[in-house]
Length: 500
Image 1 (cartoon, rainbow, N blue to C red):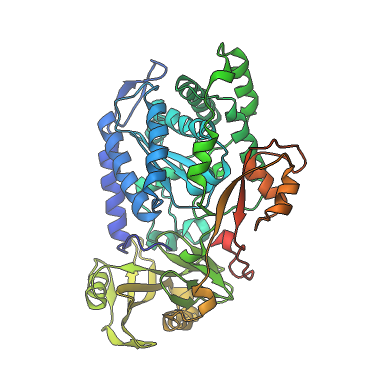
Image 2: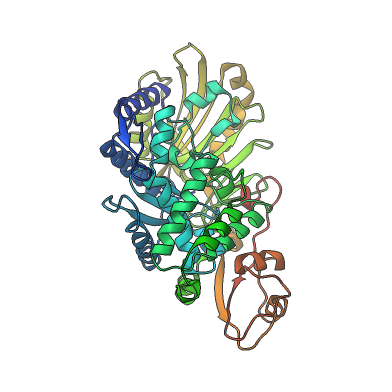
């Protein structure tokens, strides 16, 4: 969980907000596709597309969080800008940024806002591979794939926190991400993906990159999809469906290209220099589950969630969902003091509450209240909310359930709120993430020999994956290889790190 945003909670307000977004976005019309030159149905003008992307990018930065390394951000943006300049829409206000997430993914918002995850960067091996990924995402923008998809349907109600694990009624009350962040989850069909591959190939090749490295990206992603996922964002295979053999299509493009690829740039040394020192995989300092507790070393607090509930540490909130999907617990930041935050929450339209109670929880000032609300169909939701002052911040713990479930989970709501406390375990407070270290081979060897001489905190097969080599192939002296230093945190089945 990052300390990046606060949010309001009310189903009626969310419904009105979505209606307003849809009214702004959709105005019937036609446009010329910048890539194909064909006329197509376009319910979103270019100005609306850019504004939608700008709003979405702002929310991505707030909800997901950008990587703090300014030099890395500048490097990725420089590579991306060169790619975008080769496209059909060079005058867009293009932006290429790294989000601080362990998932292997990249995504583009309408209007030229492209993001790549820290996790995917650690799995690429050179700048040409990076250019192929950024080129693919830029292709989605230039061809207006999101605009076409949104013109055919309403923006999907997709959230980072609750998703489809809860009942439809409860989901209406969940603090779902806005339409802007939901654009990260658009799934493109085979034709769109093929076109984005073709465009990305052309853009990267036109920028002087040895685009043959695009094949290694597809091979790595295919192999990575067989392993358990990590990160709080969806993985590449979740947002980039691959019904065809895309690598074979790239091979055909390579065979048909007249260029002498040996004269083109690969950019291994600079890329690996930028990757060196990056956090690898999950960052336990941003919180993890162990034995039913949520522990947050960076913010030095802990809280216990009910046993058997599905737990998730999303970028903006920590949630737990009852097995039946009809009750939810959530922890997130709130704005203002505990009194101001409580008044703001309880004064929302449609919320009815009892008199707030003041007190303390483990020595921290707190305000608590019970509340109820009804949706447009009259379904009653019962809940309890607690605001706690801790670490110079206001924390909001809210539990809500269908009326039929409320009595049985009331004690769980109270127990979770009452468990919020300072984290004092020195071993947990001292936890550090694994990081990437790049080393140059002093002599020829295999990856297996390299791992013996410079052990990594990940299995050999995973080490081979991030380096794009097999364990036994001979590697020349001077070759740069990645290793992962630090121990991988192990937790119990109640909350494994890859699923946080």
